[in-house]
Length: 108
Length: 120
Image 1 (cartoon, each protein chain N blue to C red):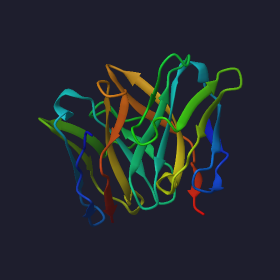
Image 2 (image 1 turned 135 degrees about the vertical axis):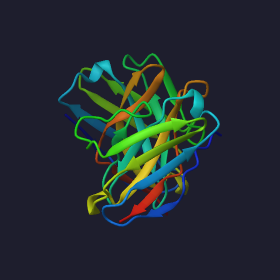
Image 3 (image 1 turned 30 degrees about the vertical axis):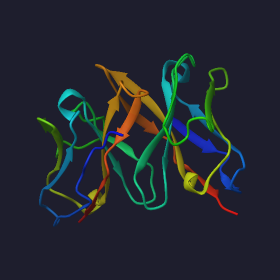
Image 4 (image 1 turned 60 degrees about the vertical axis):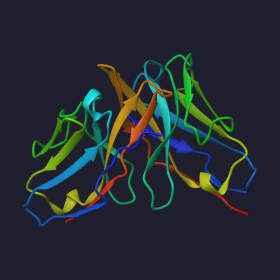
């Protein structure tokens, strides 16, 4: 099955920048979406279509993509950013499935 | 605007359980809907999708032949009938709304999740 690979964990100091990668051989031809899941909460859509922010997501959050790697960047990291982050693509060629990345735990 | 799951609990291996998801605050019948699960300490796993009119239904490989997704657009509800449950089906199950554009779909609204435990 298709796999999206993320680093398992990342530690970042308050005020610094967190950069999370997501790699997979279909990323170049797919839109990438990102979710934030705070401890003991449901996931929340964080970035969609590679770089768009849903309403309520701050401007210090951004997404980008180059080749087969997508990147989520969180600037001026705060304690409230401590969470798990997942990338996702939609695979229309295989059961119209939602494929999630392996997840990255960000510790502030 | 919210999704609220119910119907979870403890069930023995080989048993059955039916999850429900009540939608409110949006036009439920216009959206495809999904179930996503998360095993304890693990990542997110897509389980199943159903189109707005129930014309198209898809399942992940791990649940094909055992789970059945359905919906009722009159009652604004989504369901997941889970049969022949296994220990590895133990997870928090989330109901999620699909939003599709430009040839891709994402999950833009999630329920709070419901716990399913399969154990003897």
